[in-house]
Image (cartoon, rainbow, N blue to C red; front, top):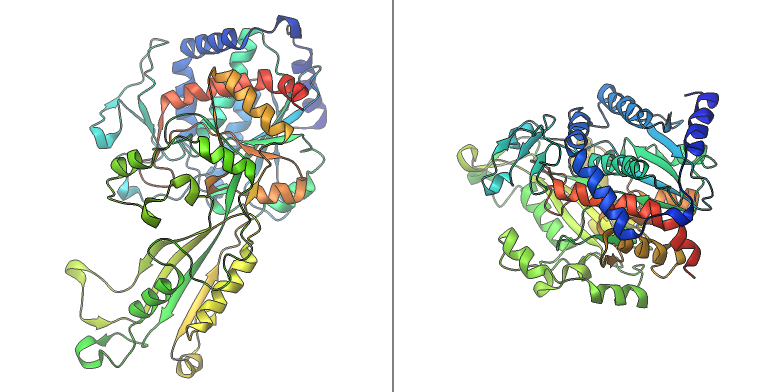
Length: 521
């Protein structure tokens, strides 16, 4: 979109007739108006989400990822929102950007979500991942496929919508746009200027994000960013999350003999790479999740007083979660989940070597591979984690390389480990007692008409550190999707009531945040 068209779109929005501040409805009246709008338009809201979900969205699929971007531009244009594609100078999928000015607003927020999704193994899905399907409940509870009804107001909030990115992260985009529609229908003016930033590469690691932010720093200037990613609390209560864990990952390969060997003839003589790799991983982490790598916890930030107070108010869900997940106990002697996600973690996300079951054979294989992700907390960096892990491997007697070893290297070293590191990013955590933090909590409670959980950090990771490092602005997560959405896994789904609640939340926050921010010390 050229500069003149963008300016015209902004002018149309800015000049649209809206009521004065004195005419703003009470929070309860606004909730009712948003709910009424949603009920009258529930079918078209779900249909819009279905159309969006039907576009395959792997960041590596450049054709379809650009189809998603163009589709998003159309969704913005339908609402008169100025939209454009922002391209990183280093390449990668485009960011879809839009903005909506509100006359008299003194604060500007950016709403972030991503439109790309995780890779899929279609054999693990009960229905194709990019063919949205509505079920009357979870498929694991016997949920049956149902048709979207034709009568407005008849969509049941307990129904589940199945598709890749139904929960992570296309639904918050539709909820935000529907909230804008609902406010306009109610004649309610947003209390803040709004910018929209829809990322097309988050699930692929946001490798092109930094140069894009640096190029567009002036355009993206704002008072705060709100990230519509992640789930609500496991109790189904709304939560605001003031930080995220960082992440980095590594692929490990340990080498054995140059050809497979008969385990009877050569067992106990030729080292088995599966055993070597299993023992190496066991040396990094104990059964309670404690990372055993030397000096790993030296730079872990301590939990402050405001964060401890917040943790003490979070509803206890551990027993219910263990029952839901059919696990007899959790790590660290059933320590609480809210405590555990405040700590770094080492997760073994995959292990491959040899075969099992009917294809198992009595051999010593040529190699074994594993995939690990590290979840990081404030003050830890991917670069330091890499140094510590590689030093640990060397202390275990490994020759460490970042490529396949040569024949000479295989003959020179009894233990060889190839480590292929992902870039990753550090953790962030906004101060919970900052004015924007308190104002957002109050605006969210007004929007929903009840208490909201304040969480110091999300267990998952988002590339928020890059935003913090480049833009130096408060970053807070305002998630809406259900906790049992099978995020990143097969059969990802959205509980529709979470979408309805999200529309109320985002609409109420847009209406109230600017006023609450002015009165919050």
